[in-house]
Image 1 (spheres, rainbow, N blue to C red):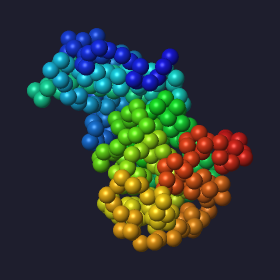
Image 2 (cartoon, rainbow, N blue to C red; image 1 turned 90 degrees about the horizontal axis):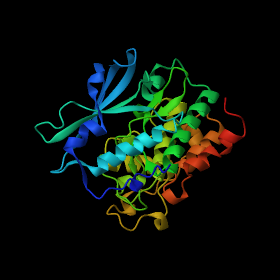
Image 3 (cartoon, rainbow, N blue to C red; image 1 turned 30 degrees about the vertical axis):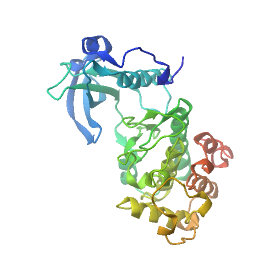
Length: 325
């Protein structure tokens, strides 16, 4: 079964409004309990599945702008892709259980209300790290890092870039396993793309995004490198309050890149930044295993083409020298 959404063909550009009931179930089978969180791309509710013994789920409410013909085909393709991925039941991807519509096909703003119903996981990684009574053990960090990278590699192998990896979008189960969540920004990718300014929370945003250059799956590896560092220190690696400050923070850590690596097509000049020397990660992330430091260093590389892939990371000695337990 192919999981590339581009293989879902249709001669039309939109699905008819009359097909809503056929495409999606009615959300009335779920009872909303309370709001878990809100963001630019939708509101997430804790809910009860009334047709499944009151099983608790997470429902993400999204609004889809309608065309004159109905639901944009791109939306149908994205949902079809999510459903295809669910068939694999990857242990590090949050499960998509259902897709429902909100009763009426459209509201007064000509928008269709959809609910993506996911398995409910009690906490995200941000909450987990804040609640942890002390530093995480090296084995716990290694296991969680492997979970995150396994989920990323799965997405990348199916031509999906998550584009918003951060502790809030990583869920931690009661058993301590990590699952990737919130694919509101995920999208099948082409070779050359531009990333909009609203994508990827600032602290986890790679330099190519901040510079406005094209990007690929390497954007997720950079974000993951920041998260892996945070697992060790329980504090963000590169906090900043603007795009410019973020670039300064990055170059203070990894050094200002050489002139030959600077993208030609960007408006920000390399000479806008001091000639920062790279820092020794051992001082930035004290008490980390040397293999962990080497892995993170290779993930936080300025040139996306020289960054490790998610699969490269999984084959790094940090994970292969000892069995994951």
